[in-house]
Image (cartoon, rainbow, N blue to C red; front, side, top):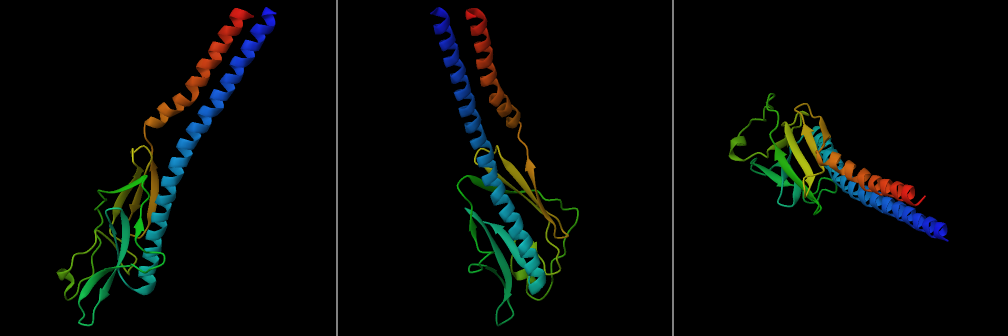
Length: 205
């Protein structure tokens, strides 16, 4: 009878270990891949839109700009009025390059870009009368070098978007040290419970 009780108690403990292990794995996986995939989706979208803006500036022979807003980002086009005056206008109605609002979980910030290669801005009458966006996509295919960082609210999941003067735009993941700690958390609870089960079995076996 005692053996049956001991065996049943051990079985209960093993079931608890399995349930806790599965629940912990699901929770960690949801936090990790869910959050990072959301951020990565926004990063990929921004990089793709920038590449599209570069292509459009070359095809249309116009200069496009990019700037951050209080809650997202937007693209601009350098236009000329009837008097020939230049003005940057937001692409409000453009289906693809329309202004974007970032989700609540994402933050985007500018970073110091590599200024080793300076891009020469177009010159002309009245060109000094307007302010140019920090990031410009020229009709020649060149762009002003830039670096942007997009991360979650805690700064734990982050990507760096890098634009080079030759028109290439890439993004890279910025790993955080907390990942190692999280991996330990994923392993340690189950290991402790497993060791406890072994000790319990040794004492009652």
